[in-house]
Each structure stands twice: as C-alpha cells, then as structure tokens.
Length: 71
Image: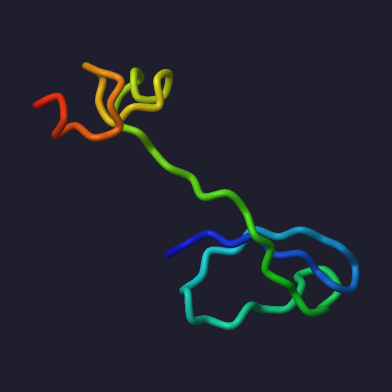
C-alpha cells in the first residue's frame, strides 16, 4: 500500500497515511477536518551506488540503457 501525505484544510496539520489507492482519506486526527492529498516526489531505490552517482542504468558505463553496453 502507498504512503500518502495529507494536509488538513481546517487546522493545517500534515499527516502521513498508509492507504489503498482507491480508499477515501480519513478525517484529520486532531480537528476532524477534511484532508487534502499533497503531491510529493516519488521514492526510487537504485540497484548500485554507481547508478546514483552517474545517473546511468548500470555501474559499468554511462549509458542509460544497459542493452547498449552488454551488461
């Protein structure tokens, strides 16, 4: 299940809620106000440290496509 960030329209409290994609958001846990889903950056896990540094798909070259270098 995805983790969503919500902001209460009434009191401004920010909440992180683990919920299904098609599930309606609950009310604010502090004031009971309506929560609005916030857009956030996706979190990605790369397989190698070299990929992080170079932005490449694999650690053996600078290509973004591993089929081009054969690894």
